Image (cartoon, rainbow, N blue to C red; front, side, top):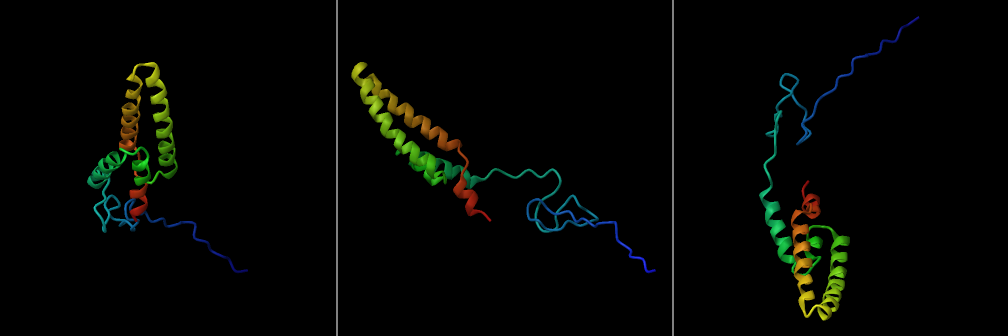
Length: 128
């Protein structure tokens, strides 16, 4: 009766976390294709910081910076919220001798700070 031999040892190849290239079995702590090695920490993206500043400048119109960074729904909601913020500031200004209009710069500053620290989805989709 013939016997069937099965290989129980499965060979698993490790891959580079950056470029998915197969790592050498002799030196699995460095990638032969890219600059990855054990303990690798990527440098912060310089382009991302310029995009953050551009989004803040666009947020002079609340919501445009969010749309620029790829957050379409929240950008539309901030635009709608700006209309309500203007109405609330006008109503508050009638009761506070005009000091209620100071609510608008607070709203704009909050939107600008939030968009600066927001993750850039448009940049993440553009990268391969």
